[in-house]
Image (tube, rainbow, N blue to C red; front, side, top):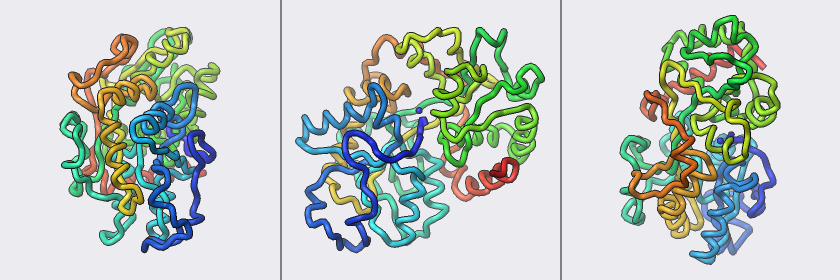
Length: 361
């Protein structure tokens, strides 16, 4: 959940830089790169924390395939790999885990058709690809990503501090919610970007006017989900935060007061954010990468991702057996809002620019 905070220095393997990966034509100063670890780009909470899903994946890959996983958690997220591709430098990674439709749209809006960052998937090499729920598929023309989990952006509120939560977007502008909301910067945070897209879906071209009203009502913007949720909301700084409808799963596991972890869908809905996995076009360990992707869609991995990453599985329900805590506390909003790849490509950059004009640094 940034949840996607991009930092360097992650457990389970060193974070590689550009050294030893100077070109994209196969030349490298590391002759053993084809025999090295599987280099997986992801976000910090996947690889770090008390019980991260990444640690289970690393141990499972070691047990089942006798191979090593090396986590790469870049400060600038997918932008780092877009820049490498533009420079003609080797991306230095095999797989990206946690890719969203918005990030895929940004890749395609930035790179020309001749510069491939991700490979089209050969689904015939995957035993479990047909388990994925049809509604979650990325539906982009080159079939480069497979869903691995999904979640819903909603508001989480403190029922001790708030007698009743906001029920609509307009409610958030009321005086009783002045200086109450914690949100994330959509340029640096995946949940923040999802919340921005939700307002685009709700208000269309008038979304910037809504954000001006939020600003006037005292919304506090944080760079990442961790800063907004862990560092501010859990400390009691404010009683409302943009987060996930699965919040109570993690809160119950941490034995927190669940009165401070109530879910508030806006307009009876939540914004669906699906995370996927993709192979870099010039991956060194392609065979192992396909084995890793198939592992992610296995029943065991889907259960672990749901429990540890606190997101809904991407596969059909009959293929995964969840811990009792998840169905008890995870909430799926009555209605779903989402913008797909076709909605985002060619538009997202513009929306982010318009938003940035309202919130200059």
